[in-house]
Image (tube, rainbow, N blue to C red; front, side, top):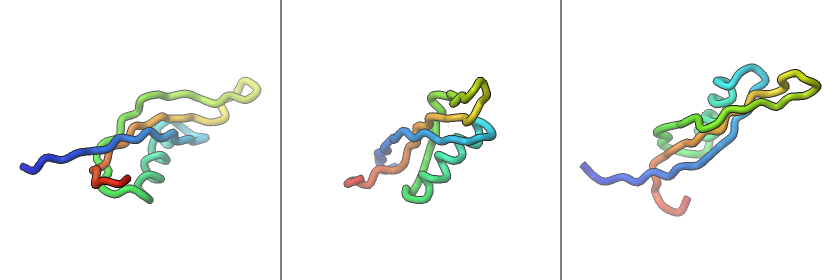
Length: 71
């Protein structure tokens, strides 16, 4: 088996509905410009609050993809 190298980046997705949708938004956007996404790990969850109400859910996501150099 050939050896592979993967690069990991960190993204923050947001949603007015849920943390799951926030994480999905981050992955969807990453998929628009990165090829060969492999693994996503949710590393942190938080919320934006305005006047005592949740305004947005935020998910910090670490995404790995196959490293091909120069990225």
